[in-house]
Image (spheres, rainbow, N blue to C red):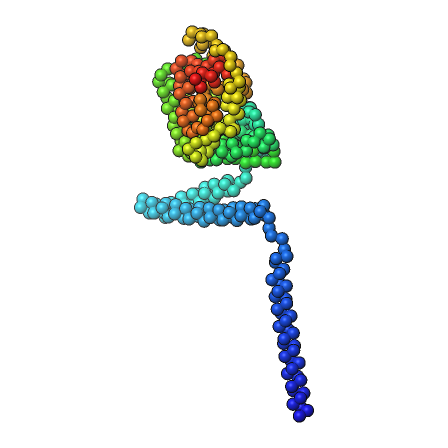
Length: 372
């Protein structure tokens, strides 16, 4: 009996130990489940950074795999063509090694991060509200480019960040022989840099100042190239909004290319409300409060001489001219791509006649003529 009681007590004590362990384990599990809840949830900024990092990494490796597959396909096509051409094995090996070397050099250049130190600044060719354009020479190759340098703090202060992004995106997306080419873009702590094609032929404004008028064949040629340029950006759902002779540049062969996309805007809908076209806003606001009498009429020759004199003064001024702005923009009404076609019509008139169709002594009178 005594031994049986001892065994019973031992079993009872073991049962108590097991139940105590179960309670302890359950308590720990509850504490463990509460622990994560006690930690602070990540903020929206952190989540956005994580999502951006994830997207960047995925895109990076996706592009690498795509490039690798394309290289393999190009090599297979080349090997097949060499085999069909009955090229000797030795010549095939030499050609493939040469092409591999060139491809490696190209990939090394792609990995190289460009910076302002890679370019030697030369002559300044333009200056705007928050940037400048200089001719520069790439130190490694000696190639000449146009460097557009934009001050970040000034862009933020003027609220022009979206315009600069739209300009860069348009130049990167649109591939047209009638658009100034963008070769690369980079930034430092103070500035954004756009390395673009340098066109040594000047602009249409200078050509018109030198020749006064163009022949019908010359006007047809330049207007045709301008139409192709505008059509190419409209196909990508952008509108330029600042078509004027100053922004039509000429290359060394005399062909025209469209430039200066600082006011371009992606067309997200069929109708735009004017909010950020400062020249139009200022002029339209003044028009509503200004009721001056119209300027006296002049003969065509007097009008031409007056325009030529004022045009030369405007060439050295940063003040915009409303001679090429569509009426719906001046009235701050909704508008779309048609405002660019209006500007082309005004430029074509100036090419053939010698001055814009709505030119007047002052900008207010010009706006009044455009609207009426």
